[in-house]
Image (cartoon, rainbow, N blue to C red; front, side, top):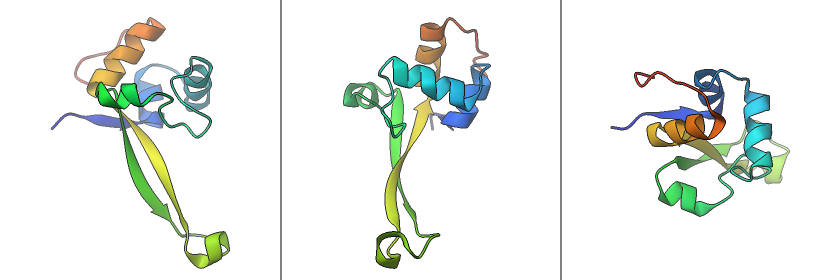
Amino acid sequence: MPREFDLATTAKLLGTGLKRLTADLKARKILDEHCLPYNTSDVDRGRFRVQLKHHNGNPQINNGNGQIYGQTYVTQKGLRWLADLMGVEIEEAA
């Protein structure tokens, strides 16, 4: 099964911080304001995967029903693409 990385791990593998990475990807219109892929074509190309998650840690949110949100994962293919885009060398074993 192909490996996938959350954005924090992706930032580490690219040698940067999470805030710097997300700001850069938002500026390039790769991620939207919610850190989800800006274009669905990037998901279709296998660069990203979005997993729906449910958060109900705060009973005051949505009348106690919690909230559904998407979390972006970067695929191995997406990691190589981002590294090329940013001019960064990564180890393939990552």
